[in-house]
Image (cartoon, rainbow, N blue to C red):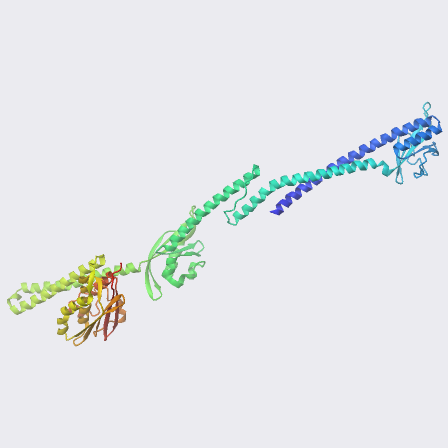
Length: 579
């Protein structure tokens, strides 16, 4: 900004100097002409007085007048004959008469003062004529040093120069002050404008008075408006960024040239390391999925919304996605890009499949006993009741199937309750007492299969819990161990206190569980050995109920198993129930 001030100041200085130089030339010319005219008129007057004395033919008087005139004129006066011979002169020999005192008068015919220059002296010559006849009597000549003649002009020039110089200083001082009042607000306004251009909308300038101050005032208003708009825009951007980053679905924004601009947090979490370097790249260079490329290309071509369900391999998994794509258009309807949203519906698909499996399993589980009941009832109606042994056999089968049907319905009701949420009747309970009751209930079954039951307790096993629900858990787990343990096997039950927890475990020497099946044993109607489970009266819902009841008590369940060696189910309870 100093450059601007210097340029303006230079312009003013050059302009003022030119004006003063022009003015000096004009005034100097006028002064020179005026002084010269005045000087000539003065010399003419004095020479005419001398000429009057010459006409009187009084040499002494002439000489006195010449001397008196010389004092006034500061030069040497000479009276010359018409031929140029010196007839009388003053005594100042330092001003010699020129060898040709009438030089410059060649061809002179008029009665006027003639001036000439000899060396560094000025010669002013006036013809002297007779009063009556007008005949030429001679010449009166003034010889004056040029320096003396120009003394007045030099004095005037010096005064004028000093006056001009003083005026120039005053004008320059005033101009600089005025210029500073004009340029300073402009400099500050320019500096503020540059800060605004750099994005610093907090920049402000001092508001001066007058017309120039209007610029600064307007600039400050602009800066405040820009700052307000910027804050509003940044706030909107932050809200939009927060929304995009924290939305549950994966999102990608692609510009009109096909470059990826935004990849949100959810998308990165879904696809993991695949997306770390996607931003700034063309979509067809980084997308590893043909289906997604086709969706993007179709959206760009048709400029319409597209929805499609796809299955994509991610690491070792295959995930289901509901993919939405929509073009981004400006106010003129021109394509600016597109947005791609990925909804992970893998869990929904699993739930849907589980629902289908549940319906199929329930239908199958209900169909088997109902078919048996119907078949044996029809047989009895057809006359089989005449044979007491056959009738008893059929009625026994009908009773078992109805009992299994009742257990199935009861398990379904229990599972529905625990899945929909229920309130536990919490109280201080002793797990060892509950386990002992269950052992007494199932001891007969163990003896029938010649299975050895071992039970041990270490420490205080009292916790906060719902006794009936916990009893249901222990019955399911111990009964399962008995069902899947072959004749002559062993089932070991342990209760152990450890710091703030109580651990229950039941181990058997049964058929065991395949490693890939362990994660599925808590699903509804899932059976490791379907034939063995159904023959034992199992419904396939017991472990699902156990899992929900343990979670309701804020406990944990672990399973370890080896096929052919047996399984161990471990439950961990807190001593105090913590919400």
